[in-house]
Image (tube, rainbow, N blue to C red; front, side, top):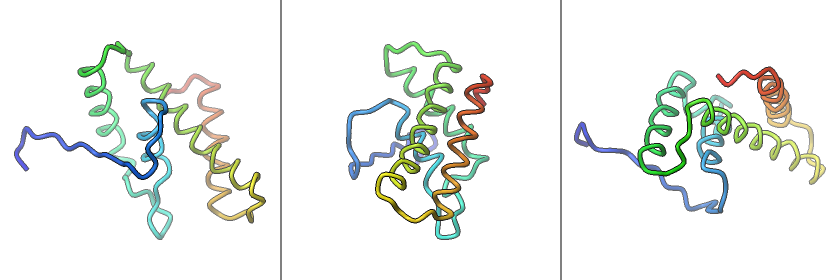
Length: 119
């Protein structure tokens, strides 16, 4: 790959109309390896978010501030956690470590948003 080339990820498996931050929120909050470690390392998160923010601001008419983008991103992460928790409750699945982790992340996200903490 050349230095100036861009890498673009496309996921058609779960294609749907949704928030512009839904996929990035799910990617950075949800995907774990077999050891339940994040596939995307936390230290990469800021670089990924910066690149994503720059790309959508350069190619859209949204005119978002970084704070608006980070709030939308945090809400997308919260929606992802809540969806996993809701699926467990709705389907009467066993309470697993996966459920507990997502429940904790959901509560932590709500508390951060309630305190106005975007990052």
